[in-house]
Image (spheres, helix red, strand yellow):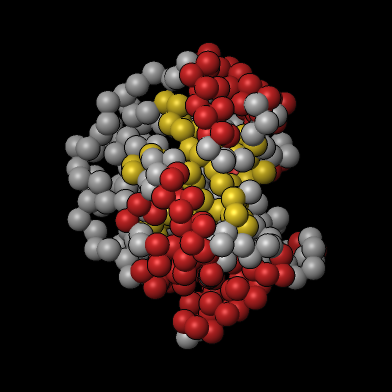
Length: 327
């Protein structure tokens, strides 16, 4: 169900922001001529950001595999043939060392992901320690741990967490085709707990899972009708992993992916729009188009949880060729 704003909610939190977009407006943006859409997105981008600056994050899987959820795209699910072996939560010192290496490589934010339905007990306490110690290294912190309750959100805030990642994945209409073990409302409830705790929200989705353009528009509408908008909006391109239900899904038209970046930028002018999973399969030219369309954040590092990502040296070369700077 699309979140709708009341009349009192519609007053923008700052100039130029809207939280009352309609689906037909979002679809009309998608339907614009490609050049016109990119021009509009780039114009919006320049009003709010340095067009040549890209925020850089590193993502580490701190607990891999053994996930009870059945997300159709994910090799960490115990429901799929491709299920990766379950591993225990990493040692805190090892996570801190990885964070130091990420900072030295140019990352400004360190993201930690755990394959859980929801964190519990001693494991959650260790994550709180990780957050405190990584933040002490001078990095922004982000975690994705599955569903949270209000108390857990408050504890993460007290530990110094900057961002919590919890994606909506796709539209409410298409969601049931991708996952059955967690509802859309479950996801929205976790996001509300995070917001109420005063933690920044990192929330986006995945495209190329067989959804229609209308589903991509509906996903972006869900994000753009949150007030405030998510501070970070990761746009993932499906990585087709052998042994998962989506392994044989047809590749998404690259221009459609760029359109999704551009529409996200127009709808959420002050959010960081991140190129996330799928970059390893993208040409430098496609990534450059995405930056032109308003993407201004990426993940550094050769692996995103369990899927490949361009190495940092290649990204540095690409930034140099495009005159971009990592921030």
